[in-house]
Each structure stands twice: as C-alpha cells, then as structure tokens.
Length: 291
Image (cartoon, rainbow, N blue to C red; front, side):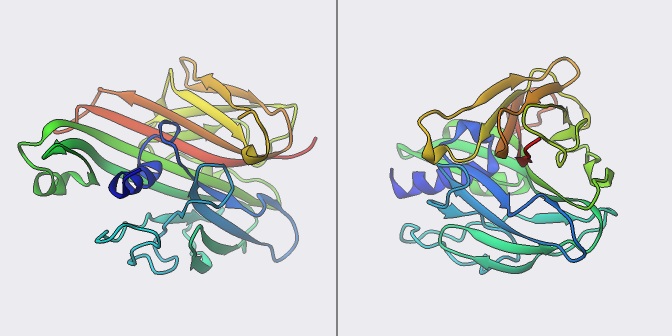
C-alpha cells in the first residue's frame, strides 16, 4: 500500500463507518465492573486489524502523549495527524480527566480513577466532512470541517465525492451498582440507548439496545458484533443484525469475554452541500460476564 493511502486508511478507521475499513479503532478497558473503595482502570486505545491486539497504530487522543508529533512509521513529509478528543463522564454527569497518559508505538494508554460509585462513560466523537477526488491522476482523500473544505479541496477536483460524517466510540465502566445518568443520549449522530445496562451483560442472556440517529429511533441500521481474540481462531465469529422500526436489536451473547459492537448507517436526508450523503457510525467495547 502506498504511504499516502496507508495513512488515509488509518485515519478512516477513526473517522468513517468502521466495518467498511480494513482497520478498526477501539478502546479496551482493563475491567468494566469493579468493587472496592479505591478502584482504578487502565485503558488501551489503538487502531488494528485484529481486535484488541496491538499491531498497527495507536489511537491518538488529545492530552495523551505528544499528539503534535508525526507518528513513527509515517512517510517522509507527512503532517501530524489530528488527535481525537476523549470525553470521560462520571456517574453524576461531570467530566473528569484521565491520568498517566502515554503514547506508544502501537497504542495509547491512560488510567482512570473511579472516585464515584456508579457508571462512567468514555467517548470519542467526531463530526465533519470526508472527500475523495482525483488530482493529476492521483487519488486524494481529505477530512476536516466544512469551514476548511473550500480552502483545501480544489474547486475543479475530478470525481469528487463528499460525505458528511459522524462517528462515536464508547466504553462503559461501573464501580459498585450501575447507574443511568451517563446513558442519556446527546442527540447528535448515531448513538446507543441501552435498555439492558451495558455493564449488566451475561453469556446466554439477551440484551436489548436501541440505536438513535440525532435522538430519533434509527430503523434499518446494520449492527455487527464480534468477540475479541480473532487472532487466535479461524472464524471471525461475527453476528450481524439489523435494527427494527423502533431502532431496536436483541443480542444473545454466546460466551463470556470482550466484544466489539459496531453500527453504521447511510442517508441522504438532511444532508447539506457540498456533501451528497451522510455516513454515521457507532462502536463500543462491551464486556460479557459468566452467568
């Protein structure tokens, strides 16, 4: 793969619907359900081919390591990749800061001190435009804000295709008993409104989730659920589902372990120029416990 296309693929893994790309972006907590008086978790964040295995690039997060540097392994002349903003909400809805952040060759890592009882939500969300076009016979890709589009994409670009994008990646962690405050949707992009608490998942039991697009039930959304550890088995083990008219899916977990859930949808409704379509995606890392 040519260097510019390789970096575009990595960026797309974070900024576009994830099942369409060769690489997946994810966050992996050391635990999702904790007890005790002074619990902590460590979270790894990466972009990889194999789920929850560090072999490609770190997920670059604002405030974690030197986010302005050009990543190791980038082609000559490459510009720094923009870091995504990590938001961590405590059980009372306040925003808290991660600690001990570090940017490595294959992963970003940070700690979170769970000082409140209840459920925390860790989220990385992006919105903007994605354009692909040809310039002097070469395929180009650009991502950024609508305000920068006219400045950075040639007005006479050939085979120009522009998409309006929304992505959201989440992890839920509970200290003590689960709580509901952080489960409230923001009303922006594709989101999960769990009817079964995401930290109350057990093998052999069904969980019901509702997907919303801009706060409204999203029908016909394709949902993929993949158990971790795909590096060590021949079959992907993927479950494919589609939301019903109320935006709901029911998932029965076959085994305990960490799972990666991804949902995506495309629409032309509500799209504004220069975009011709909207692409929205959601992903989450979920832990399923033994019954």
